[in-house]
Length: 438
Image (cartoon, rainbow, N blue to C red; front, side, top):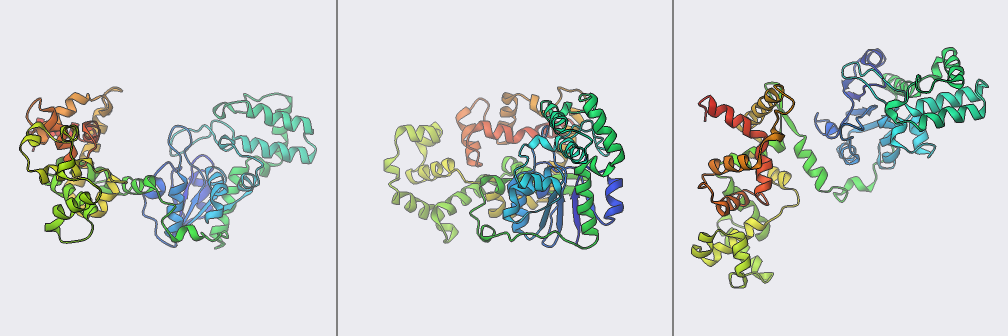
């Protein structure tokens, strides 16, 4: 039963591994990290630390996805304590003093556990967590080392500072000197976050899994799921290619742009959704009948509708039924575009050539970004990317209606979305062109 532990500034690896030698250590959790490693039922995930300010934090629904899949999730000490207090009623186990303070409403702010820290792998703490000062001041007050007023003063002055500025030096005065002297004699009270984390790891080492509440009825249906979790599970599903992670979402977008028969695949997906189950050769006819059931027929199309969805040549030359089919396909907006494609066309994300292209694009983008601070894909102009798409899709120069139609035929709501989708892959294409590649 693997135990995965996400930690950083609360405990160093050198402190954690002697307590739980078999632990699989991960950096502090950021958004998507709980969806990456492919945890399986029976695994235990211990969330200690998580990014909070400069990276998006781990989301609640990421934890719910693990719980629904049969993974036990334990939170303590820092971000883990906060998330456990929010989700313990749904089956996440919470342990430790900090968890109890959040659960019981004694504290409620995210920045209670936040600290400024240095880079991996040390994650050296550069500030003191407010909850650490709060716990230490209360211990000193109970022991008589601080008066009630002095203990409150230490906490209030710390709370008035931004979490990045909460240092012993910034708080230096006679009261904090007395507190530090007390902590020197009572080191167990000096860092409640570290103490909580060590206790949880020790419990796991002894085979004492924290009691986990039942997940409840929510886990038996899909009502808790939304667009976000479906797309996140696709975006953060990764496959390594020569040591570079290629996400399923990026691979599907690469195919959406570059696969020659992708418009036919998208058309099939849309018409099947509209028409429902049935023989594939009859998709278009059944989709037209379904549309007619909602009052939409070739005869009801207005000039404005055909002008919006069709090129001038199509509006003039297409048979009425085909014109409506193309409008149905181009106007279709799936609830979860990438995850819907992943389910409908599993081969898109599994294609090794596409995965390799995504990994190569990551490498090229990283190399170019290392040249200078302003050399990155975000600097690419939309017009340049649009011209690139026109070449890839064999659209004539300056034919804006045809370019927009080509984007819609590939499942993009418009050209702007297609431009953003091709942005990560453009530099790789230029590199291959310069090398004489295809």
